[in-house]
Image 1 (cartoon, rainbow, N blue to C red):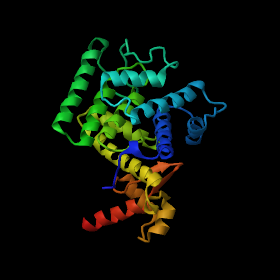
Image 2: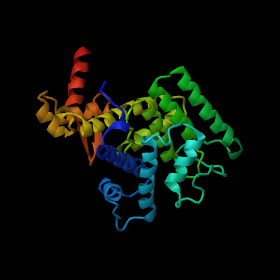
Image 3: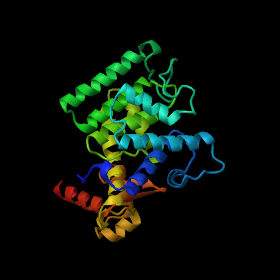
Length: 288
């Protein structure tokens, strides 16, 4: 397994890059139009971006602020209280019911599943919160637990809008509390992510668990690129093929990444991986 360390103790500039990627990804899969470069300018340099919806700019700024609260441990619980605080932080001034539970029945776009009706909303949320505490006490596997708590929250769909972004922030609270880095669910992951959530309605929670494990592998190598050694530097697959000396082709590396066997991340419209990840894959493949 790739080494990991406490994300809260890494240098501020390095952490900012991870916050930017996470904010861009979680907003983009919900339709936010800002590019990664534009999100960087907005968060890092305080610049505005012309010809973009005002809502997209506010979502970017306010999600980044909410994520900083999570990383700094100012919001550090998986709870109804945390969900309301995060929703208010992200959507204040954007949604009229920011920081409030929905008061109407809703449907999940693209899903055959219907969330609980309004009269059952609070009791469902209380069960969700209590069940998480039970899983913590039983020391259930971190990724299985993450899949279950995230799926349950998204199934309840407690807000009129913004359930995905709040749910992914809560997911990151879970991982940070277990000493894993931020998990970055990016636009390229969107279909796999939504399909895994939908499959869980058919009692296939393992697909969401597998997705989170693969996605965390990509998030880990991204973090190691920021704080690790030369062997942790992210490379395009063409660069990785040339530098690894393994004889693996770019096509072979891409296939192994998509199969979840080699850690990789799709960023700037291309797959990237690292020498460390390739060496780890070779070791495991050699033992297989």
